[in-house]
Length: 309
Image (tube, rainbow, N blue to C red; front, side, top):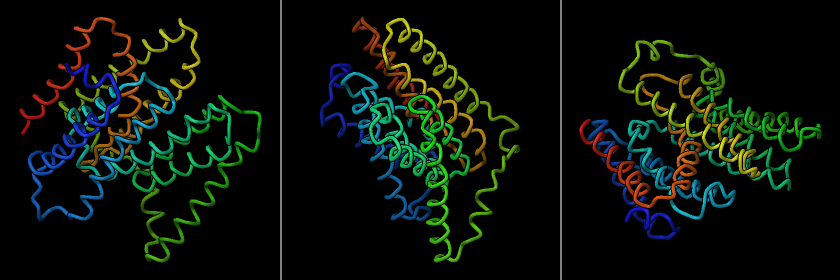
């Protein structure tokens, strides 16, 4: 039943998931994070929620445009499910905005494979990553992804590598100009200190650590399985999957580096994780087994979530 709903792209799928995500967001705020209506700045909260909902459309656009999966809605389904698995991330507005801008960067980065307007796409991707760093400075590590894309697609053109200089200059000038107007020039030195809060890493929070470890191991396993499967079929999708795998690894590293009592940045790994999961689902030939996995994927996180309230 569930597979029959989401195995095709329909407007009703977006309605179902967006309504659920809308209600779930408020449920997390009031029941899991114990916020009251007085604790939330309504205007800012609506903006954050709007970013979360719009991210669903961005994920669907990237997946469809780059043909990362078949023509179905499994990607946005699992993107939504991961919020239920890691509900705490909805309390971290920096993670939400960082993820959104990294998705925009990923959209431009993956489109480089067409070999059209490469320099413009490199500039856009690097600039979006720089903007994402306003919320988490360690997001700049995602520039490694841009370097990798250049190395894969057009490494011999020296001008592709020099684009980073123009991106850095443009970003710095615009950000510094805004900070001067706001009278907050100290933001640059205070924010971009690249500090690591080791006190938040140790002692380990066992439930969060076990959940994150299982999540990472599952995706690593799925990643290896996908590369073996794609390698045997000889498809050109391998190159794109390498970039996606690298983005997942960078996301895990950034998640650890920004760890503190008030952060939960695992959301930045959702997009590559979704691609791994959906590619595995699409390989399942037995409808009953597929239905069982989908039901389990939906019911199990909800049960865990409600038992924690």
